[in-house]
Length: 143
Image (cartoon, rainbow, N blue to C red; front, side, top):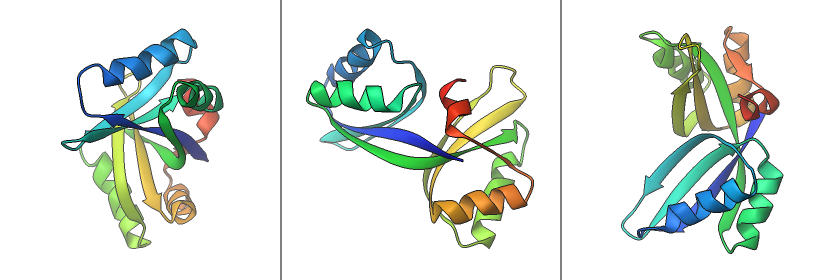
């Protein structure tokens, strides 16, 4: 039930991100979700892609610093309070949320929330035991 995510460390200057996306585009790798965080000197581009290992390889071959991490993806109705219910469930089990990002499914009925948390296995179990749908990587990569 874990999802593999890539984190790329990028210099914070014009054109750097386009180089990364061009590499992925030329390799026919599809970006399913992304999150960009920045500081004054560098940024971290977090990606969920349809082929994690191929993406990591082509990016590293082009000189990018890439790290693979595990996150979880939870599906929640796109209604007020959906995120709060997830966070309360994780908080009750003392699961720390390091960061998260979300997107709405094509149907518009559900949102997918990508969460980096610790401990991840406790987070997955807590969500599943409380009726939340934690998605396997294969489903997220193919969305």
